[in-house]
Length: 453
Image (cartoon, rainbow, N blue to C red):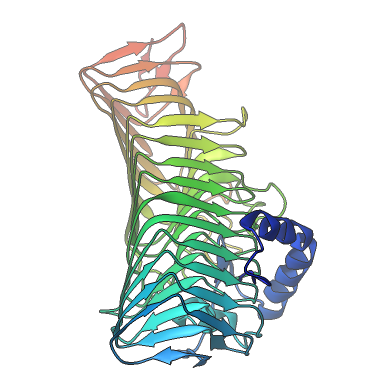
């Protein structure tokens, strides 16, 4: 779903000059992305499009394909061909030190094959390859020009101290699919195109572990992290300049530790902006890219900053969310802390009136503020653990599509050592209070009609 890159015309061109080039071509990128989405006519997904790829592994060609074990230093690999990787490693154990990989041109014949299998990427590891990359520079400026792509079971890419920049649409920074593994340390990743998450997975998922570095996306529908896999990020900085910061799809996870996250989803240009504007999205698209099941979002330490919309939005999936010692900032004063809602199903995300979210939220040593809303086809089980201080309201609201209400919309537990300070009247299903509730003159109304004050 994400591919693009930047070309270094001369070895003396600096990263700063490349970023200037990214900015000057942004209007062309936006136009290209709109054309692609219209032509494919597929369900929109944050971070990319839906259906359309081949059921068979389709990876195109490679300008250079390494098939034997080797250690290589200081080489430059280039590609301008259609559906072509600049460098591919197939089934071999390879160490790449100080290499430059440039994918400066070459059209993609099918963006989904690029998303799923690595066709047209700058670098592709496949067929059980085991690749180590150190001190490299990877630059792409072709659609589907993912920077580093790990595809398939038993394929592993270990990459460190490397700069990755992509310019065109559908061009992620690091991409993992088909059960591959990606271990990344201290990378500087910048993507400019639409549908170009900095850290990205797609159909078939895999395992991604990131430690340190800075990962920035600049396009629309380009989260800093898009997960259809198990993704762990520690001690890093994640920025999405024109998109939500994080997306989890289906039975997959994001685990963040001591990581600073910032998102800025567009109110008009996002593929689902008319549905909801948010910083973290947890959902099931029904596209087949992610198994249906429980989505898991865990964040410990660090900061979570949303510059537009709700902080967390959950729809059409079951989700477990755990927050601990996170500094949460919502710079949009009208945005909710958490919205657990059904959707109108125009994008194929379940059946209208039956596609609510189901959330189990736990917090420990966590400060929270803002409004929480759960609609009548959704459920929230919120446990405020020891050290939690929540200042805000919880409301059950009517499902916008008129769906039949479910039971236990909002079950709240305040554990010993936790404090809830109300900023307005509250409507919930049930309450177990072992801690402290500061009513501030407001009331809590339970489903059985009991009013607490």
